[in-house]
Length: 264
Image (cartoon, rainbow, N blue to C red; front, side, top):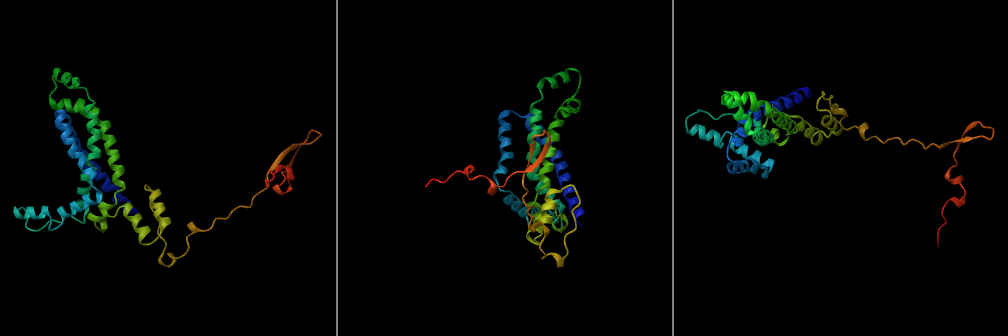
């Protein structure tokens, strides 16, 4: 069961990363090709969604993708479909919302890599007889691969920790690691198991305790045994030149003069 949850988390994160690459690279390429003033206005439209809460954006997608939402009503009004599409509570709805929220994390690294390419390289490629397509495959794409890798890694890492989107737009078959951690903490009150899930994302999760042992005190909260203090040992030299080990005096055995006297 828990291996399946890890597999679903990795699969959804990988698909979201792939879709962000396929949609983010053309968007970044278009932003790099327009004038700076137009680019600033278009970048503002990319940044504005960050000012909205993630919860609000998920509720917006719920309004759009539900059976009586705007998408289904529009398609039914245009006679494109005969019955409403199931766009929520499945993997499709989760991917649509995740790609919408993670797309800026792919656009900005790729755009930075595109703007860092000198314009003289495209002119030199054209002077050597290469067309626009060949220039893109031989010059532009290799130079922007570090930006694509950085954006893909950033999107994948952020997608692994998504919690609200799978909880609102996904169904029981789209439970991710974060949802399983929340279920272990709030529903079954198994905090050690949730802690293990949060710290071992690449390994299979252990089996949870049975129902009859769920109320037993966990060894995680067991009282630790405090070791008894040991007296420090000092190394001394005997008058005959030999070495010996003797115990240092305790605070009670010290001279009273070694302690500061109180001032009345």
